[in-house]
Image (cartoon, rainbow, N blue to C red; front, side, top):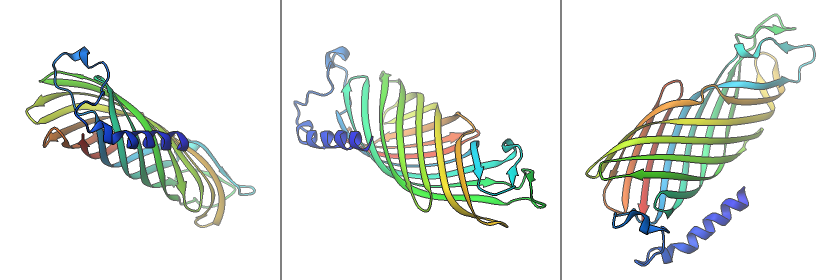
Length: 262
């Protein structure tokens, strides 16, 4: 995926000078919308994203002789994420935008073992905390349709994160964001949702009170697939815009985006 992502970004970068010309061919099939004004074809943007969510444990293993956990469903797992990325995009059709992104992610996952009955120990365990950070690579697309007064869109993003630190870790995720909204002069307002399918894996050694350093292997997935979202965008000009979105429900998220088009 890294090679695919690198190739896409090189292609977009090489195309930028030509895209700034008035006779840019993008988007293709412009005759589909007649004389309706379209966004400028190329864009570069900055995203800042945070998320707090609960996880389900899909697999958990401790390398402790004679000790095993009871029902893993009793365990509480929380995940906090901060994500920053640079995004390049292009409107290849009047209704289709494609993009690639590269960014950085900081993540903290806490597995609370205190409520789980532990066979082989006379006392409960405490928290297993996994702090990681790494590089995010992603690809995606947006389908959109609208008029002067309203719009609807569907954005799908695929990301893969190579996490560093003291553990062998990785995160793969797919997000789907449907939106429907109103257009008022230079403002857009929308409601929608965020679907997130994620798989987070960690293995290695970590301190676990009161046992000391242990070997562990864990696979986690999101406890809630959907949450609601509301947002707004202000267009300063045909070239520059700023967006803000918040997520509500069992999972919270915030998203800031600045986009420059040419």
